[in-house]
Length: 96
Ligand SMILES: [Zn+2]
Image (cartoon, rainbow, N blue to C red):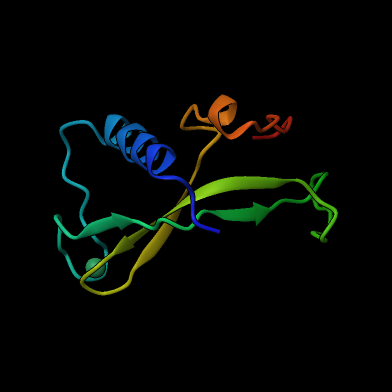
């Protein structure tokens, strides 16, 4: 499900604050100016205990999906670590 435009913008701003003045270089294509934050959020299931298995009943980390528009290289950033838990209405898991 697509997130609303305001949340999408806040995610972009939070990521930009983390990057600061550095150039984010794609490790595959080498491009630095082709990054996009997908409007669709994602959730990364996490084990509830060290070494535990992941199932549909586990906690999830809400994540931003960052994509290099040149080559498709994709990585995730934890939205809780970006300080967006309140805006997401999310509880922060113990191991977030
Ligand atoms: Zn790339």
